[in-house]
Amino acid sequence: MVMPTYNEAENIGKMIDALEEQFAKFSDHNCILLVVDGNSPDGTAEVVSKKAESKPYTHLLLEEKKTGIGGAYFYGFAYAMSNYDADVLIEMDADFQHDPNDVPRLIAEILNGYDYVIGSRFVKGGGIPKDWAFYRKFLSVGGNIFSKIVLGIYNVNDFTGGFKASRVKGFVDKIDFSTIPSKGFAYKVYLLYQMHKLGAKIKEIPILFGLRDRGNSKIEKSTFFDVLFTVLRIRYESNKSFFKFCIVGFTGLFVDLVLSNIFRLLIPNPSVAASSAALLAMLVTFLLNNVWSFSEKKITETKELISTFFLYAAISLVPIIFRFFFVGFLVKKIAETFIIYNAALFVSILFGLIWNFTFYSRIIWKAKK
Ligand SMILES: Nc1nc2c(ncn2[C@@H]2O[C@H](COP(=O)(O)OP(=O)(O)O)[C@@H](O)[C@H]2O)c(=O)[nH]1
Ligand SMILES: [Mg+2]
Image (cartoon, rainbow, N blue to C red; front, side, top):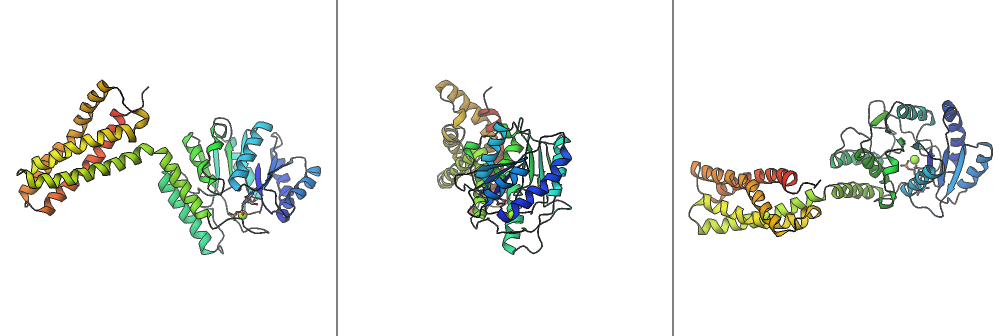
């Protein structure tokens, strides 16, 4: 169990005592409590060292200086993996907001075969303190809904909780801690995302997040932005191609709209005007997608580039044909006005975006084996 502390001198002694009873329930396992202290000025480390004399399961890891809760956890994880050969890592706060009596329930689910067990405040039977300030409630509930939607992990309800058990082999030992986007509270979202990506079997168990026993919360006002930016960054990093594709798409859309309306004035036939603009926009997007959106799978060979463009054109031709008939149909059916023409254009473009993204990423720039 890794437990970060910063000014927890009033809590940590009692916590060490409380854990003895829980660890004793797993006598066939070697349970170690690794307190990672951020060089607390209140003497937390001294309390831990003193306790360790009579409670040998207690170890102290002292940071030279405070690096944030995420920094402390990753320091502790790395230490526990290399020095204790840890099989399971448990995260827990020192201030009794996590109930030591819940520890066996976490461990039990790991023993049941789950790889990542989350003490969850947002499942039936779980909860947050009723008398929390509105700001904290908002941060917690809002942060979770936001994380869930943006990260697209729907089987998790608590993304920012700090009471968890993780399997090391095949999971935590595969995570690169050197590139963590946050050393603050948002490390939690990062870790969760990595575990999910590694295919961990995740289980949420309900916990009641209590009130802090003594001392003060170290949560900072900036935590809100820390979580916000970390979530967005994770999403961006893992979907770079998609975001770039969208930007290229919008560039193409702009080129397309401008050309379509210029051609509308130059070419009498609206079908021809609209579809030739799309054709030119397509050429622009092909080149941009190749050098930018899908740059990791960039086609450089001229011959391949040409043959791929034919395939790209074939795929892209479908929305153009759609547009040819759709714009012609709508204009003929209703009226040849600016509004009708552009409405038909809009629907055609939307169809084209979905169609093209699906096939570009699956056929044109798919990962080479
Ligand atoms: N080492 C270390 N521990 C920290 C740091 N920030 C918070 N903690 C510890 O992390 C746990 C959770 O922090 P807390 O302030 O209670 O957060 P809250 O429960 O969300 O208000 C507590 O055990 C803190 O002492 C830090 O910067 N460094
Ligand atoms: Mg707390």
